[in-house]
Each structure stands twice: as structure tokens, then as C-alpha cells.
Length: 317
Image (cartoon, rainbow, N blue to C red; front, side, top):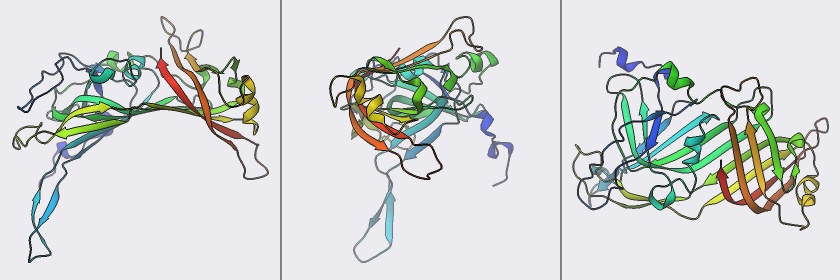
């Protein structure tokens, strides 16, 4: 193979567009042909997406030989992982229940690859399996959202190149300085919080596999549907104190239940506010404490503690 410029692609050419699917959810045993959404929008301040296709290939052995005689394809499974800096609220809202789509979880068309001829791929009817949002104290420390999507099939996509307006459209990424409230029950404990990891798990399940329509069809051997099952929500909070019971258990009358939980992130009045303030509110109904830890370690270090909350009814507004 003679190397060409197509063999050497810088990460800066990577792209990440998305939009909700507009075609009906593909059903039946015939070859699906759902129309691609007319338009997609820039995904925001993202790292280059990590894409994986498992063709389910396996060896076939014959009696009389310990070497494989054939290799056959199996069910085709598509996954995509991407991490973004916090700026794009509509995208995050599509990762949790209540966003529409099959079983009330958004079905997305995710366009990735490169901004060069033939380098684009569209992951069809993708649903978010897990969403992890990390808030870590520090000077200009980015708030990040890591998303894992599962998709039905991957087709060729349009070769799109973002404009400067596209790239800047989500606004300036928000940081730890934009976290104004961390509320547990009636108290804002932001001043003693050193970090938070909020996790949403939609527990997707792949349902069945389509027939093999031949190598020309990207829908060959793909799963019929992605079924969201029982949701689970967790928040792990790190404190500048070993006494997490005081800051969590002590805030409500019960000895084990927490009050309502919320995190408010806003650029209102800050030096990065644009034409209008952006506010992300991550909220949950009352949950319970799962674990509490008093951190040990080097005697020269600060005494700290962590608590993990099991939450219900998480929303992003």
C-alpha cells in the first residue's frame, strides 16, 4: 500500500454532529431504509469520539482438525464513546429519560469520522447507555460529560466541516468556578465539596439480531432494538472533611435518608456570560446514602471523606 495523505489524519479533523432521528423506528425483517435526518448540529466542545464495531466473528472447527476451518460473522454491535466539556444542554438532556424516542429515551443520529471525503459515518438510532458528569475543583477546571452510546447500524454520512460559528455555538465551556450550588436537603454545601461524579445508567439491552442481508447492507446482522431497562442514578461526592455524616446525614431529620439533591452551574454575572446567561440544573428527588468513607492516607494530608448517594428522578433543566 502506498501511503497517501488519507492515511495520515490529524485529530483536529475529527467531528461530532448529532440530531434526533426523524424516521420511524426500524421494524420488521426487511432491509431497513430509514431516512437520515435532514440536518444535524455540532456537538460542542468534544474530544474525538471513540468508535467500536464488533462483527461477532468466530472460528468454526471441524472434527479431525484443531485448526479453524472457517471464520463466520455474527451479530454486529456498535458503540460510541465521547467526552465533552459542559456547554451543550440539549445534548445532555437527550441522554436521560423523558427525552422522547423509543421507550422515552431519545434516538439519535450521530455523525462522526473526519471532515474529509469519505471519512464520515452516521450511527443510526443511537441511545445513551451511560452518562457521567464530573465536577472537580480547581482553577479553570473543566466540567466534563462522558457519554457512551449504543447504536443500531452505521452508514456512510455527509462530509461535513464545521464553521467557526458552529464550533462556538454552544458557548464557552463551564468550569468549577461556574458551580454555584451543591444542595443536599436544605443546605448548600458547595464550600466543602472538592468533587462530584454524577452517573446516569439507562441499562440498555440489545434485542435480537436481523438477518444477514449481505455485505452491501450496513444493517446486516444488526440488533432489532435497544431497550432501556431499569434506570439507576448515583452521585459520588468528595468532601473537605472526614465527617460526611455531618454534612449529609445531619441535614435531614432521618438518620439514613437524604433530602432532595441538586447542582446548579451557571455563568450568570460571570466574565464569560454572553448575550444571555446559561444555567444547568442537575436535580434529583430524595435518595439514600449507599456508602460513606473517611479517607485515610499520609498523615501530612488533609482529612477528607466521600459519600455515594443513590438518587431517583434525575433531570437536567
